[in-house]
Figure 1 (cartoon, rainbow, N blue to C red):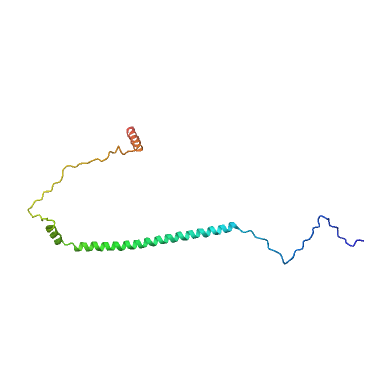
Figure 2: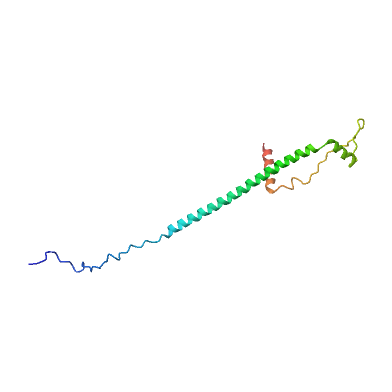
Length: 151
């Protein structure tokens, strides 16, 4: 009688068993994801670029604000100087300066002062309108003349 009732295995199906130790089990190596690294690097560089641009814009806006403040201060000083000049003008001093330094004399009540105004008006044409026209302007004028003639 047979001691073993199991069917015999084919020779090809029998594979030699490898001895696997539990101590040296290694995890499967993961691929390094270059695409992911490139994406994060690109995002970081882009965000740094945006931050520097916003910093530059903020700096320019600050300069504009200081320039506006200086302009307003100068404008107010200009207005006060104009008011001071208008207050200092004295008609008596102006008349005195005109008589002494410039030799001007105030006309009397009965004195007649003749003013000569030229009666002829003259116009001097510096350039002809036809000389300054280009080809397109001439063509448009001819087309306008033709349309006017046909109406």
